[in-house]
Image 1 (cartoon, rainbow, N blue to C red):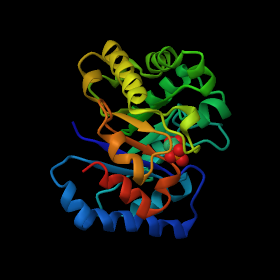
Image 2 (cartoon, protein in one colour):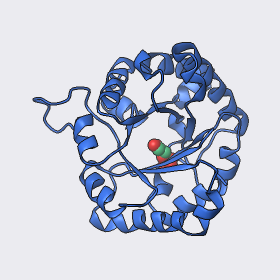
Image 3 (cartoon, rainbow, N blue to C red):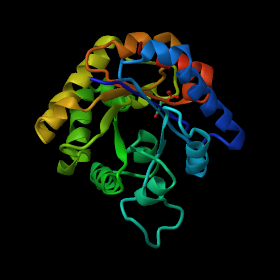
Amino acid sequence: MYKLIVGNWKMNGLGPALAEAQAVAAGLAGSLGGSLAGSGVRIGLCPPSTLVERMVRSLAGASVLVGGQDCRAEASGAFTGDISAEMLSEAGAVLVILGHSERRSGYGETDALVAAKVEAALRAGLEPIICVGETLAEREAGRAVAVVSTQVRGSLPQVLAGRAFSVAYEPVWAIGTGLTPTTAQIEEIHAAVRAEMSAVLGASGTRAPILYGGSVKPGNAAEILSADEVGGALVGGASLKSADFLGIIAGAG
Ligand code: 13P
């Protein structure tokens, strides 16, 4: 199964940051790309919306997929400040992150809303990366598996069957904290996510990769990426610097 490693720039990046994306592309075109050749690893970057089209242009011909960080479920309308899946697609995006914990907690996004956004992404031809993950309080209450399983069941609409997508497990307490779960904890949740995906989607639920996200760095990437059912990584802070992101990608080799 191919691995997918995606950088989520969040609300970071003005024009000059495109140089980092170009450095990632250059790294992939060099010896790192050679060592990954045939491995089926796919690389993506999700900059802020303002940079999507410019990043697509500046990476023309490179093997880096560009994506958005969210989209509205509707295709157009009176939704001040929002962006539709169609708009991202027109800008050249091929991926979109949906249901990130920063959107679930900051904007009250529910599983049902995330599922509606997933349908919008598919309608526009985007490949969704659907995020799930428990808070520290939920983990400490022994509810991590239950919480994540419920999120997967509620956030993955039936129309995903047969379509390209991934699920990203991002424990909220591991995001931007430098903390990571143990390999055993990651494997426990990824196994539960896989079981739910299969229950909801049948055979296509057995194939789509399950990414891990939360304080992935060059120093822990190889171990995390080799864990059972870890089909890639969703990287925040360490994706802003090309050297760090390339170091993480090297861990997939
Ligand atoms: P960090 O890698 O900065 O912990 O962020 C993870 C994340 O939220 C990616 O979507």
